[in-house]
Length: 480
Ligand code: UN1
Image (cartoon, rainbow, N blue to C red; front, side):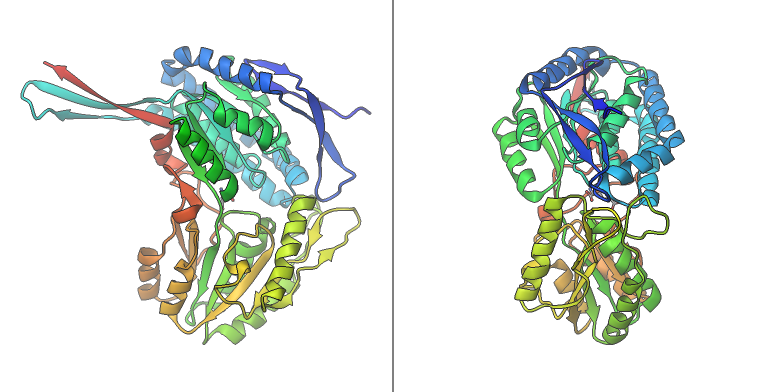
């Protein structure tokens, strides 16, 4: 059998790129999902030109047509959630139930934005000058470049593409080179949705080649990016130099506070979920568990027992809690941080070793450090793997100070039964999202998503707030 080839989608056509790369299953490196093309610079240019040509008609197209198309896309994703979730688990390595959940989320996002097409509202105000009326309206931005990461191969493309199209923009999507399969499947669904040629384009390939060219293309009006802080910082500079609007979602070093009065079982469960589910590969994952003295011994004991029961294995196998790390290079980075934590004086309580399974995959035992302090690199830098550390503190005030002592500010959690501390934490946590007795990761699709400090830059993503980035405001004055 020949390995199936997958092409770019440009101006309503499937177009072969320069060359093809294998899409490899991280649970079993002998399993190749298919060959995915790498776009040439010329093809990226064709995609941008096609989007520019489609924009005048699409930007004034009826909202009913846009709503119908997005609804159709959402329905197909939802109907195929098991198949798409399995594809996702196979190419990215999160467990199949997590993959199916993510596919369902992508479908729901399209359906939410189908409704948002109809709800885009403006304002009318009186002028300070008598006899003049003022309307404030929102219009599409233009052609938007979307650059998405490997850890949410279908949900993040969905939450950038759906609002972009809903508000009348045209897009060029560049998915992560590691996981082009879900983005290709999404493009295939979009290609049958009735959306006109050129409105949506898919170009696959490397960030350093296709991503860079997209950011710097004169025909691109704005960039929405999710990925690392180092790449995000560079994109911000390039966009600023060309006066392009930019939205960046980057890393996290999210704190999970556990207070003496927490429900122990609940606290352990949400710490395990925050730190290790999806193999810790979420920018919302918690890697700093900040625990107060009174509960500390019981917490450590219960965490060890819970972690010992975690099953690490093939993402497609039933009953698995944690799949493999996504790639060889990510595994090497995770292993590096485990060594760094030990060299810095942290105690590796459990995990951190490479695991072997029947098939050759990138398996790692979830790692937990104790005796760590906030000056250690493992508590300051994003690892992006199943590696968490415990920081022991005296009381709530110390916990809050440690929680906020980070260059990041995406998500923050607290486990407590105290209304007083929960309320204070919600107000004083320097994070974009706060969770009370819930994991730091795993968010809804209809409310704003984003952070502060080095985690995010530009307007929020998702929910109604997505219009802030994906539209531009016009103020019109009329003499009556
Ligand atoms: C979630 O926690 O449900 O890249 C979403 C990430 C985030 C998405 C997290 N942008 O991990």
